[in-house]
Image (tube, rainbow, N blue to C red; front, side, top):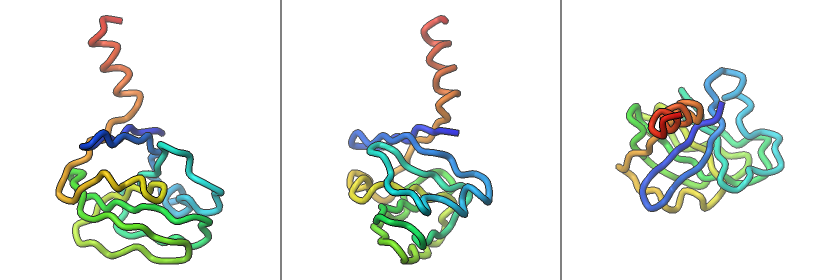
Length: 124
């Protein structure tokens, strides 16, 4: 399942939604890269690791209302920070989270829901 994540300063990515134990466990492990404009949203999740990863990532820690608690770059074979109140984690290419500010909310919508709303508004 794909979700659209939007924020301030023109931030927008399409993220794969990892909402099962297996999807969260595998995460970005063993991938060669993360395509530009793509991300992985882990929900629920409070902490990550980058074992078996080949590239550094930006990690965005979100609370229960998708407020940015912290962002950091995590390199392969490292543990992400423990951030109190984290409920979801967004993983992006290194540098992709530079537009995000702490204490700002991200807006997450499922692509199918968004298409349905757009179709209703356009009268289709």
